[in-house]
Length: 384
Image: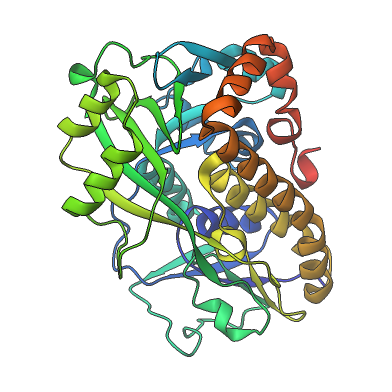
């Protein structure tokens, strides 16, 4: 018989979305979060149509639409000449082609919207300051299913063998923000811009609700012991400058001027089982943390949460979990492949870079958009 109650480990985007999606199907949940309070974390976030349509179903999108930015386009730009190489239209085009908006916002804005909805939902109960070490947290009522939404460093994975494990990807993200009033003129105020160069790329877009630009420079690099969301050392800053040598002077100056950088080693998960065949399942980064080269990490967490709830609503637990993994795994694998291809293309050097620029220049915007239909046009579970 369908489940009545779930325990969710983690109150990030995937965990909160799962609670709301389960509630929509009459299933109550308890959410356990180790943090004592949900503070402002992370930086900018891109929410593509495949995820925003789910947020609309859960009653979240209307509030977000009042504060986020729907970019006119996603632009690919040469990091050397600042010449636009290609652009995928977004804005009104995204709504018409993919049936839902493409928006950019601060991660905290989305988390607060989800948290407010969970707090107002009588079927959801949030427990803060609960640290899971070697045993599951105490449930107020028996849980039919335990959902691990506790990120790339998931503790729940230790409860069943053969589950994924985290590994350093070989990539570093240097994150910072710039006040819009101080941003140089080459930063587009209405679009997502990805500046491409050998061994690195720089993603920039405005955050309407904070009046700033979100900036993420991603390069190959080495991880320092215990380095995680920390301020880069002098050596790490030198590595960043080295990766951007030969870039346009305006971009190099921008990186040099901003002293408040966050050094963020990027971890992914290995392959492995997402569920134990009985009542425990992983979603989001806990199951399949991936690199940001396709800008789909948050979207996949949202899709996971929504589709898991759909499977659990009308099947026995063990069957639902097996079907969920079987259904989701091919899409995740394809997105990993797309991310790997994007990394190769974005960081291309020499003749490969020249060929990339020529190919991009020959592809019309509608052709570029068509390449993304399988990602952005996807409709989760009962949204089809």
